[in-house]
Structure formats: C-alpha cells, structure tokens
Image (cartoon, rainbow over all chains, first blue to last red; front, side, top):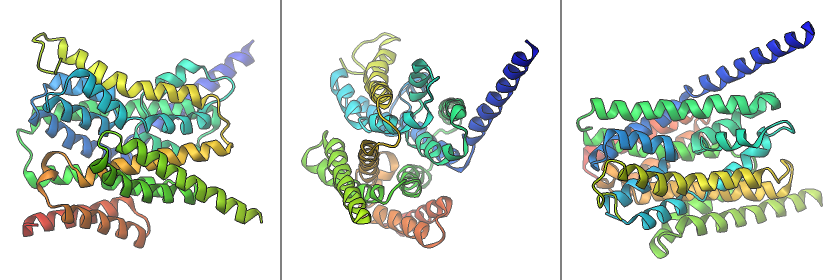
Length: 248
Length: 116
C-alpha cells in the first residue's frame, strides 16, 4: 500500500518537474522573440480599431500569429464572415501537418486523446519548433506534460503582452514598428532552418519561400496550399532519391 | 455580415470565434485525429513534415514580400536584403538565431534611415 502511494507521489513530483521545465522553456530566447512579434501584432490590432478585449480574445482563441494577421486584415477590409473564415482557414492548413508530425512524438499507449486535442490548440510555429528541438531530451511519457507547460504558458503570456501594448503604447515609432514586423519572418526562417530533421526540409523551405509570394500574385487565396503541396512533394522526392542512393 | 455590421457587444467575439478560432482549430483537431494513426518512424511522416515545412516557408515569403503594418512602408529590396543578410549571418557565424535576427533588423534600420 505505502509503496504505491510513494510511487504516486514520485510520479506526481516528476510530472510537476517536467511541467515547470516546459513552462520555463516558454521564457527562452525563441519565446522572447515571439513576444516581440506579438508587440508588433498588438500595435497593428490597436491601429485597426480592434478593442483590447477583442485583441486578447483573438490571441487566446486563434493563437497562430499569421492567422491572426490574416483575420485582422479581413476585418479591416470589411470582409464578410464566411470570406474571413475562408481566408483564415486557407492560411492555417499548415497547422494540420504540423500537428500530425508532433502527435506521434508525444503520444504513448496511455495518452488520452482529449489531452492531445487540448494540447493541439497551442500548436503554432514557435512551440512546434521548440518541441521538435527539445523532445529529444524529454522522457517520452513526460512529453505531453512538458508541451502543455510550454504551449499554454506561451499562449497566456502573449495574451498579457498584447494587453500591455494596448495599455502602454499610444503609437509605436515607425522604425520600431517596422522592425517588430520583420522579426516574425526572420525568426521563423532561422528557427525552422535550424530545427530541420532531414536535408529534405531545407529543400521544402527553399521551394516554399519562393513559390509562396509568386503564387500569391497568380492564385491569391490558394498560394499557401499549392506552395506547401508542391514544395513538400519536391522535397519528399528528393528524400526518396537520397535514400535510394544511400541504399545502393 | 462584416465585423462592424451588427451593433451588439457579442458580435465581434462571435466573428472572431467562427472566423478565427474555428478556422484554425479545425485543422489542429484534424491533425490530432490523423496523427494518432501514423507511426513516428513511417516514411509518410517525412512527407507530412516536408509539406508542413514548405507551408510555413510560404508564409515567411508572403510576410516579407506582402508585409502588413508599418513594414509595408519600406521597399521590397530593403526587406529582401535584410532577410538575406540575417540568413547569411546565421549560416556563416555559427548558427546563432539571435545574431541573425540582430543583423536583419540592423540592415532594415540602416535602410530606413537612408531612405530606401
């Protein structure tokens, strides 16, 4: 009897330890960079006439930064609800393969699916890149706990960041605002490049980054979808060829 | 049915829920559903990872070429130069993310001051 309760206390302490490790990871350099990108987003939202409560609500419910920017763009343009939802949905298709790639890394036979659904809400570039990087050093049965601490801390902290921007900044100086908007793409580029699992990911990045803007001119709305499937497809073929060569 | 069209306190929140939350979390939930049916060593996962990566890369390209907010008032060439120099610094000087970002921002600010 006492042994099992000791086990329970031990595993509780272990869970708490990894929860805190996850939360602390939210305050790493990538987490701070994301927060500075959300400062820029807060400035954009305020400029667009969105109220403080609406902006914070947006960050908490939508979370992914590009999707938030697309949503605000549609609100400002006076788009109808179906049109706005369609544009945001198209810009967020990438979230599905990101979650598909993440789930097998943190799932154990004991993991309940509602836990995974709850955690999936936190998936966006920063937490995804951090998780893919750090999971190697997290015991498998503690990865959901770790990711919960990391992902939800990022969400809550940045809801706070946006609220503070509304309270403090009347208007950001243009040079600062411009820099804050460049932080998101340069940070995404460098962290994604650094966290690539295989060479094929680099091929996917090069094709995607060029195709995205080009297709935006030709087929606006479907640019991301096509760039993703074409870029991913080419990268995958590259991967298969490399493997075949390595086997031969 | 625009964001401004119904004058009730709850309408903007409903707009955000349907246009934002539903439009993003549907994909995430589908990801959990499909992710539960794929082994973490399968080759299909490499394909999924490649597609996810290419999609994010396309977002990056669009954020630079068709920027929002104050960044839209800078020249395209300046933004591309800032990104390229940040990336080059990252690759050439030991893969420090922070250093790459600092170089990119530095180039952007110099360009803004010089009026590009």
